[in-house]
Image (cartoon, rainbow, N blue to C red; front, side, top):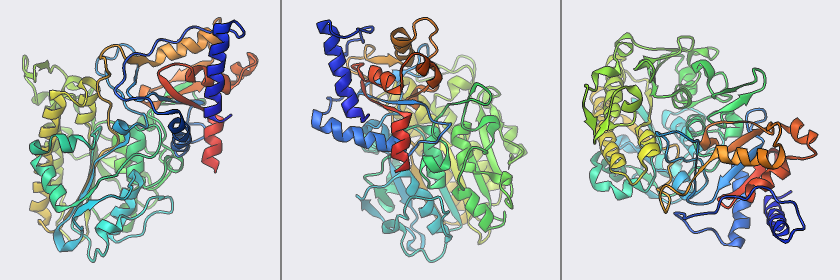
Amino acid sequence: MPPFFRRRLASAAAIGCLLGTAACGPAAPAKTGSTAPPPAEDDRTALDAKFLEMFARAYYPGRSGQVMLVPEPGEVLLEPDSPFYRFMHGSPWDYDVEIPLVIYGPGRGRVRPGAFDAPVTHRDIAPTLAAVLGIPGAATMTGRVLDEAVAGVATPPRAVLLVVLDGARRDSFERYAADLPTFARLRAGGAWFTQAAVDYLPSLTSVGHASIATGAEPRLHGIVANTMFDRRTDRPSGPFPGSAPDNLAALTIADLWNLQTRGKAVIIAQGTTPRATIPMAGHGGCLVSAAPVVMAMFDAGRGAWVTNDRCYRLPAYVAGDTADRVWRDGETWLGHEVSDSRTLLRTGWFATFQTDALVAMIEAEGVGHDATPDLILANFKTLDYVGHRWGPDSEELRSALRTLDAELGRILAALEAVAGPEEVVVVVVSDHGTPAEPDPPATDRRYITDIVDGIHDRFDPDERRVVFFYGDAADNQMFIDRDRLSDLGLDLDAVAAHIEALPYIFSAYTEDEVAAASGR
């Protein structure tokens, strides 16, 4: 059943409840303020179709959930008792999907400077980097070469840097432009894409990084959520269990360059979580005929850089650098206590610690020392962590952005020192944005657990088994026991209609709807 008509039926059922002609489930919470006005009814119909298509681009059987939802604009869906996560992305609204994208490379006219207004997506980045390196893209790449900016590259540069500023909103680079001299330099001398946006759902870290790295739609590369449920083990699973790239079903730009150069190119990938770092590193030495690449991933539990030795390598000088050197007892960042690696990650200090390691690898691994271009891929998660806790309008976010800009300047200077100022191409992008503070604050946050409880109260009050798992709140999807639904004489449409009747939910889609749209 199309979601628009299901919403109409859900509304009719609610009216029937009030008139006494239909059964009444538990009352939905009343809607409070929102940071954006609700769309008009005609617009909602068009948006329903658009959002279904966005979910369809990221549908992968066995990995995707059975009901996928979109909150109303301005609503924030969270898990309870998460002090580090007061803001949550994952939606299709502008604040979550409008992203910055700049490509910079003044040497030999490789990158044409200017502002470009054509629509651009994550999957355009990898084929564009392939063009800069002078190699064909992979068959799974569904993006296009941004030839308006990089047409006519005659010789590849000695070093290519891809930086993903996790959780960065495009409008932050307008609001805080005076604080960001490095980004201003890149934007003034490079190609700035004014309409870059995420075009799949959910808009989150794992899906974003895999799409950037592979140039493929999520339904092709297979990374479609931060958390899924594996029926083989009857347990939840991240997209990269054991920090292994096995679930990544498409070649990345690092893989292509690894194979093209027969392992001769220096390839360095760095980040903070498997869901961000592994797509950047690609399959490394776990790919047939490929060589291990350098991969440094920060482990907050250990407070140190780690790797998966089966596919990658970690230099000893990086492995020995621990985060406890960054803070001292009693020191605070903007008045916030820093006492361990988890709290350090939510400060600008971590960006400096991360850059220390990345610059050390650039200098020690021989980047830019020969005619074979080298590839550096980095995820900076600082803005994401800060944004989740304090929001995009906070002084904490602005301070972290200033620090990141300075650290990006250090990285660029290190590359220019080893490769030459004319021999570096830089791409800076983000994987997603983040919502602003709800209006009014503190009353407009919603909890996934309340939605699950409402489903069980309505359909399965005794055994409460209809929803057997939900993962990261940003996934915006639930794993439903379809056999249990059948035993109750129900189907996924009933669950989706119940969710859509909640005043803070814009739409809900069943797996069947999304699968059909994906197949088209």
